[in-house]
Every structure is written in C-alpha cells, then in structure tokens.
Length: 193
Image (cartoon, rainbow, N blue to C red; front, side, top):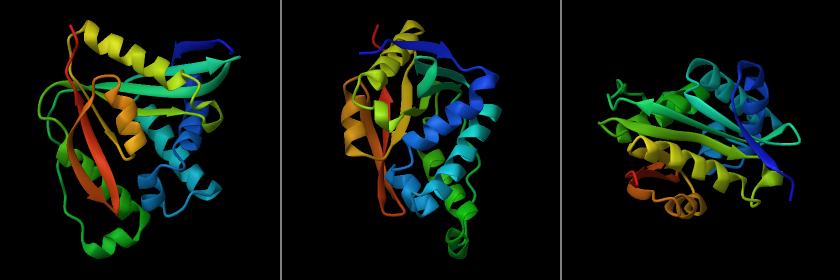
C-alpha cells in the first residue's frame, strides 16, 4: 500500500480539494436529489459549492495525499451552537436549484445542536481510493483532535453505510429527517476522555 500523508489545507490547494470532494460526493443521494443528476455538469456545480465553502469557511481542513496527489479531504469547524435564521420557502421555489439548496441547508440548520461542538464535514475520499483506510485515518485524526479538547462533535450524512462507518468512531444517530425523498441522519459524538 502506498503511504498516505496528512497535511493542512493551504489556499493553493482549495481548487484541487474542491474537485476531490466533488468527485467523492457526486453519487451521494442528497446531492443527486438536489442537483438532479450525477453527470459532469452536476459535479462542476458541487465543486463550486465546495470551493466557496473552503474559501469562505475553511475551518480546519486536512488533506490526505498519496504521491502528492490529494485523495481525501476532511473539514472540521468549531460551532458555538447559535441557531441561524430559518427562512421559509414557497413550494414553487423548490423547482429551481437555488431553492432546493436553500431548503436543504435550512433543513440541516434546524437540526444543528444548540451548544458548542465541533462540526465534521465535508469528508470525502476519491472513489478510486475508497476502502483503503484513508477515511479511517482521517476520522481517527478528527477523533483524536476533538477528544484532546474534550469537545463533542456533530455531523450529517445520508447513507446507512456512512452511519455504520461513523458509529465505529463513537457517533450515534440523534435524529433523522427526509429531504427530497432522501433520509438524512444527524449524528452526535461525546468526547472520549
């Protein structure tokens, strides 16, 4: 197995990291429902979304590299637990992409914990490198970091496979909701001290 190096995201890596996340998450059920497809067109939209996130709200972002190529990305951000404004959308607004994205984010915001925590996400590994321990390595690092400061953690996911993966690291499902016909899971992890 090739050696995987973990490093911090730098501004010069944002474009490549965004591309990796878009490839890793192109087949994610909620993204298919929101972006209404999983072609190169949708991948580019998802890449732009992650580029904006990593530029505007980078938090602490780790990169997994093999031979200098980014193969995995993990972002964590400290959240104070304050609730964001939750607007209401008209049904017709759900027929356009901006409306669907706004609705999705609003639904996730409704679930946000009301007290201080570390938010995990996005986390993604290139499809060609999944199942090789890279996600495990990134999640182990995340748990080590949050446990070192005795902090709880929170994440959102939309697949049973991911729920089982995160449960291995001490996360538990605390609520579920259906968004555009896709079950979304909200998971919490208390620190292990």
